[in-house]
Length: 226
Image (cartoon, rainbow, N blue to C red; front, side, top):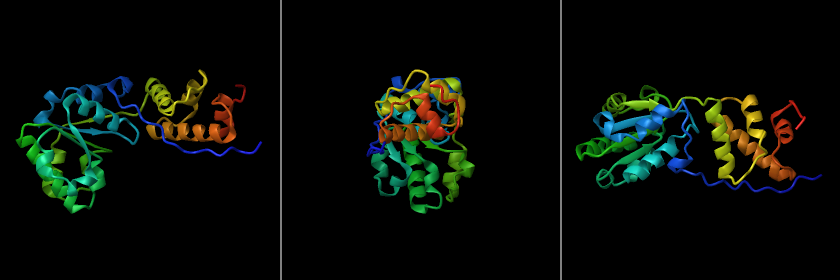
């Protein structure tokens, strides 16, 4: 049977608090983000691997605090004084590695926000010492910022993440598919995104429902008794 044409239309991610599944591996990060009144010096670094939910939690926090979310790389062109008039989340600080202008902008934003009595949420992978920041004053402020990490997913969180990724694409997999995937796949957020992408594409191109049999064909030799 010839493969059907498929169109990789991205699903719309659900970013509300009710859409964020709390599990032991992320409970501390969720609690910290939701209690910005307790942040030391009014700022917090939220770190974690790609796909861990940093952007989702940033949107949850922004909705609660009426904060603005800004990509770190957009700071060089931003009106820093205007941004500092309220709480702000700056996403993906490691993207500023080697970029002097945006780093200076973040340094001034950091100081103005705190001077104005507002809160600042910063996101990135790893720790500040590995972010490649070259502005010493900014580096010292990042290293002095309280941080919390989204840990790798356990079975419960990985199952919920797969279910959400499928739901974002308006896909309803067979009930036994997610437990099957959890037992076979790499235990990471990025792997979950990749698996859902591959299964969605295969289902569309081959005109087949999302089942364990399709997953076995896509992921490699395995139990095909589905």
